[in-house]
Length: 409
Image (cartoon, rainbow, N blue to C red; front, side, top):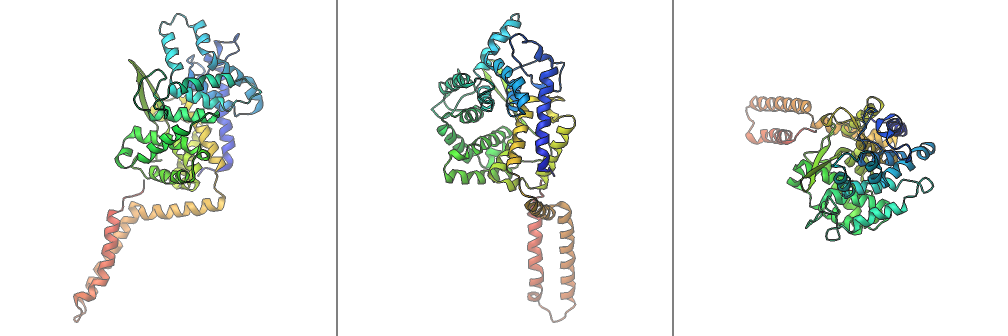
């Protein structure tokens, strides 16, 4: 069970991971005279020179919320790299023939633009001037909207309908920086309401639904009362979906492309769903499965760093930033100690009645009771079948219920 009092220390541990990478990582040695700083895809990897948008955006997002002395040291340099990336990279990697195309593709990537805007929204005005940069990104997004409701994966990609993933990230960033997102939110809510039944059996669609729910949930204040209420039902639906499990750490890798070039983004749907539940229905996180999951995250953060074992041995900068955000929502919506005990006790009883062991003992007990009832009826010479029926019908109905009841995940 995750103790809410530990969350500030866990967030500070993640901040330290970024500080260490920026301080000692090889990727930080390339722009000393330009006073720019970049972060790569991974943390705890000082030997790597790789750097890019996802890692730098993640670093900016986390450190812009860190202690004041840290933000003054690193945040302005991170902002400078994001704003001047194409120029900076061209000065030191001009020998790479593919670099211009890669930089251009990144500059049109809606997911990265949306995440960049979101990170910039946390930068305090006294640290770096970001207003012009924010407006530049917002205009690029505004000019590339599809049907005035959402976005394709790239700003220069022609599409007949918006895609969920880029629309979610663009909406997150635009909303956080004060731009209008009413119609994109309506689109996301409409798509969420349509995700039912077999649509949630697809791993990519399910991950997209968790992300969209999180984005919409962070914008609750912009929704009408009926839509806000519906978010509780959507949260419940996703929590009960067949693919929803917290017994292991899972994320979904989603690929997309522009012409012949492929990109991918990892969606840590469990973190997004837990964060959304914290906003909409905090008590839904008060289950032993989720609390055990969160306590495992705590141990990972305090140990070798959180990572998905299916995604490689290194700690992802972007995932760490999303975990940092998830912890914030858990802290803000923390349930009181008394209700934590009550809700976890209720979940324990529910898990007990749904467990395989309980089913076995219940079936044995029902069988013995039925045997006793039949023998007792048989020993009474004057007894009729109608005397036996009350002792058999109820146990049989309970037996059918147990057989049809699937065990809790």
